[in-house]
Image (cartoon, rainbow, N blue to C red; front, side):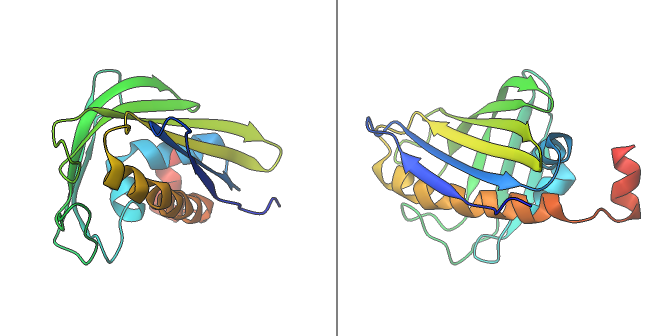
Length: 172
């Protein structure tokens, strides 16, 4: 079993944050966790930022969105987070990319891009997320440099769980 090492870096041009982790689960399982709204609501969530809505239409041109209740996390003065966008690229179970328009950005209409790359290896999946378009988003970029680490760790924990009967049936 490979140790789950999470690492993150801000690009030299300050335009992107790249984070990655090893997950002891096959890419198909990880991809499902990234594209199924019910599963996203279970793992892309935290007590400091409790999710009230997750929608995902995982197809090229499909839309997604999520919103949270008021929590303890504050970014750019925002405590109730909303984010939405459009699927730009989808190649199951290897690539998922979408626009990311967030109400906690300095420019609340700025389109940034989140790109997930899942690479199989002998003991699971290397999951890499790149969030680009952040050159003018100083506060959000700094937040994402740590925030994506937490998201990846939650994705890892969720994806490595043994599925219950209901979840097992959805995999068939």
